[in-house]
Amino acid sequence: MSLIGEMRNRISLQTLGGVTDAGGGTTTTHSTATTVWAKAENLSGGEGIFGDQLRGTSNYRFTIRYYSSLTEKYRISYNSKTFNITQITDIQEGRRKFQEILATEGVAT
Image (tube, rainbow, N blue to C red; front, side):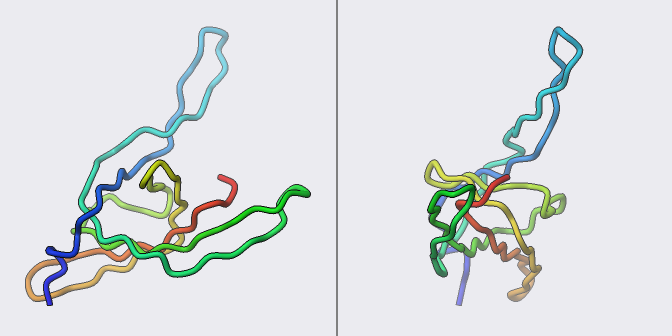
């Protein structure tokens, strides 16, 4: 089984950074570190109450080629949605190395 053929989705891996404004304050922003091909799988969904409002959440699994600087501090942008990374697992298939990312959409960042 080859994972490469299943990687049909483009995702952006984003990092958190800060920018100093003219008044001396800082603003946090996310910037795209890289865009990669991925296999995206919707694992589950649910609803919860957040701030007195009903909010939907989705759990996804993304499989990408190994990206050495990826940590849980990154986030994923996929199909105009933002996902917080909860877990990263290195997996190996032959000599090729991949990463499996578990991420949640619809939670406060």
